[in-house]
Length: 134
Image (tube, rainbow, N blue to C red; front, top):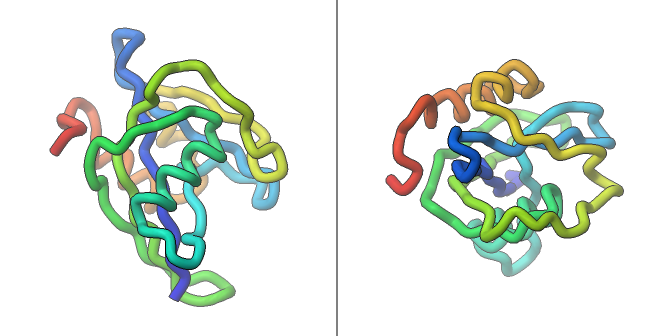
């Protein structure tokens, strides 16, 4: 089974709740930032690493957001997600071999743009104003 981790990266500093999504080069899609665990890496460590690599923001965990499971051409895959917040809004470098673009959108706008129904459902589960620390 393929194990991956990622995050719902939220920002509420601009007077509304926004979420970051990424456009991936390899798949030409819009998705939540995520990626495979490295050997010896915990789910949480992988989630933090992948979100930082794909969005360019230094982030902190807020709490577990949920998990998705689906079949790929390489086998069954499980992705665990955490709610996260940027430590600050100074964006570092993004892994440009994987990510073409990072955008901050309202949850409704993100759901319109996200390519995968399971990821849209996860974002919808945390909106409109469910506290992120639960």
